[in-house]
Amino acid sequence: MNIILLGPPGAGKGTQAQILVEERGMIQLSTGDMLREAKDSGTEMGKIVADVMARGDLVTDEIVIGLIREKISGDSGSGFIFDGFPRTLAQADALADLMSETGQTLDAVVEMRVDDGALIKRITARSTCGGCGAVYNDLTKPWPADGKCANCGSTEVKRRADDNEDSLKQRLMEYYKKTSPLIGYYHAKGELKSIDGLGEIDEVKARIAGALDG
Ligand code: AMP
Image 1 (cartoon, helix red, strand yellow):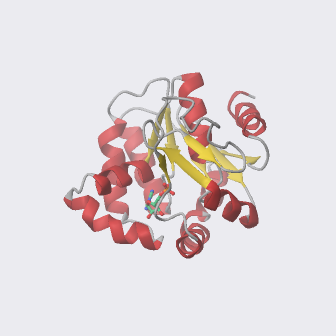
Image 2: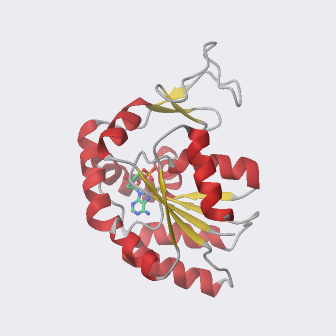
């Protein structure tokens, strides 16, 4: 089963994708993670995208489609979770082409709905583990009291450079202008399942399971 998690920054896509990876053996394809890796390892492409990402703008379709193209013919586990991709109609069309070229299908698009006030709170509170990438949140899933990641034991807490209020405003603007039209696009194709993304992690997980398995 190949799915897209669609929603604004901070909707919980990464958190829920990690759960689907652990519990269902799916493979998470996060273009944001791929771009951050390129930036951190200082590749040419990483240098090009660094400023764009820091501002909260979208990277070109060409770059992100290229990243997805590389991954889509590799190991698909029990299915791909597209997390943060597609973000434009051109990316959505490119994904449809790539899937049909590789003989795969897109089974569901799960829209995670969260209001803006909650997004700002969630994003300014979030962090990830420097060791394994596990997602934490000061409000909903704080770091263990002993300071060690529950997953890998690392003590390195990372906060994203673009998780600040200015960049977040721009990221939200980009979402409403360029990504939210995908809701109508996938609705028209009969692939959209919308769920309430507010609430405890386990509640949201159950709603996603209902959308995928129901
Ligand atoms: P994310 O981790 O998904 O919030 O993405 C972080 C940043 O990476 C975004 O604000 C964009 O600058 C860039 N980015 C990630 N995915 C895409 C995409 N599919 N299209 C364009 N830019 C992207």
